[in-house]
Length: 138
Image 1 (spheres, helix red, strand yellow):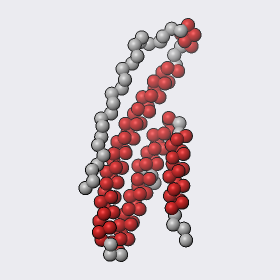
Image 2 (cartoon, helix red, strand yellow):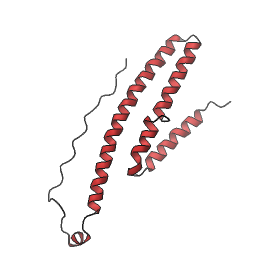
Image 3 (cartoon, helix red, strand yellow):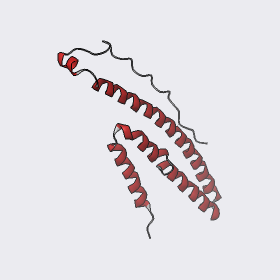
Image 4 (tube, one colour):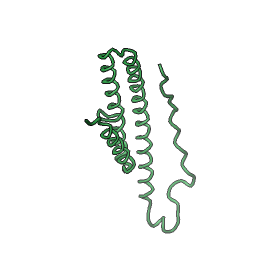
């Protein structure tokens, strides 16, 4: 009888490989699907915790069921945090892509002469996103 653990490990490794090899224009959507999507790792783990909680409740392990419910709630909070991180990451990736595209559009003639295109000072760095604390244990 198969426990399915190799399937879960293989799926996780697949997502990791796909994220590592992703191009900038596909990373945001891939990360969103892998982590916070309906078939993503957070959703899968949340479903597993709910199923385990229901099993424990049905077999008289009410304390364990309650602990699993708390963990599922914390996982929901983590999923929301990951969604916010993904939004900030998407903005950073888009901003970086726009800067790279603008640099690529610089005049080849100006580049050949060594002339600078645009301001002579380096652009101001983008402000850091606010630091979000992770949810605390309940």
